[in-house]
Length: 127
Image 1 (cartoon, rainbow, N blue to C red):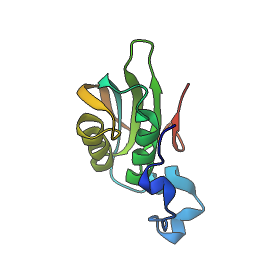
Image 2 (cartoon, rainbow, N blue to C red; image 1 turned 45 degrees about the horizontal axis):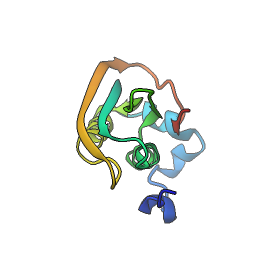
Image 3 (tube, rainbow, N blue to C red; image 1 turned 135 degrees about the vertical axis):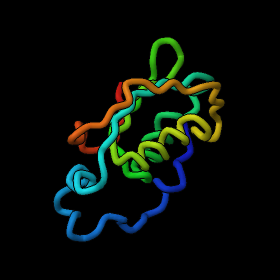
Image 4 (cartoon, rainbow, N blue to C red; image 1 turned 30 degrees about the vertical axis):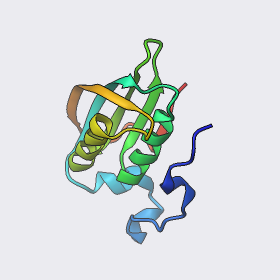
C-alpha cells in the first residue's frame, strides 16, 4: 500500500480565483497564456512505487490536465496539457523527482505542440 502524498492528506484552499470556480479547471486555464500538450514516457524503477498516484497528485497541485498509466514494458506513459509554464514544471517533475521510492533513468517527451483548448477536464490514472 502506498502512503498518501502530503497534498492528498491535507486539505488545501483553492488557488483558482472565485470567479472561475464554477467554470472548472479547463475554463480557468483557457483564460491563460497559450496552451501546450506533450506526451511522455518515464523509464527506470517507476512501477510498484506509487509513481502514478504521485504523478496524479503533482499534476493536480501544479494545475495541469491529462493522464498517466503503466505500460506492459515496465514504463509509465501519459499526456500533460496546460499553460506552457505549468507543463514545463510537470516535465521537470517527471524527469527529476517522481515518487519517493522511484528511480528515474530517463524521460522521453514527444508530440509537444500548442493547442487551442484542453482535451481533458482533470488529471487521471488510466488502467
